[in-house]
Length: 114
Length: 113
Image 1 (tube, each protein chain N blue to C red):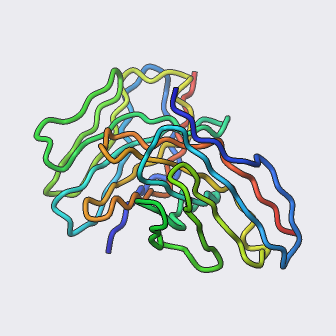
Image 2: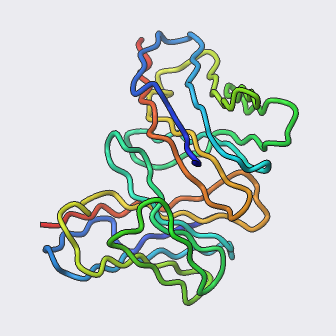
């Protein structure tokens, strides 16, 4: 079954610390993509980072990096040096190669403490 | 600038009414999606479309239908609205040449009384 699992409903982290948000996925497709979105309280969906299943290096975008471990089927988001503005809901998602279906996890609400 | 526009930000409907949620994108994207977002459940895929007049069921299609008569427009239809369809509905589009980014509309908050 195709599925995205985010096991942390909520997290509290001190400002300036690094944060790891967990994401595991399940698919039998060989070609797929994984990405992360941020949703602040305003409700907009902000694209953060993308990793293709054939990409050998972990994706990085500024303070965001995606720790892709294919054998473990995990795609954790790492935020370095967290900021108060990082407080938001974070969603992990997977694009399935066969039909471009895109499914999301249930999300993790991140709270950055001053 | 990339734009996905959902016709209504807020709607209030009565049980049994037919409801249309419209989504228009101006980027000539092939793929379009409808999700509903509920607290604790994340985004759940209702339907998606990879071409005009083509549609595929997502994970929760029951009670919904869709229409894609033109490439830029993807409509979500609730034939007979029920209270359990009260939710935030998000439309998104994706270019055929996948760049890693799914573009979202602002969402439509539907309340069914």
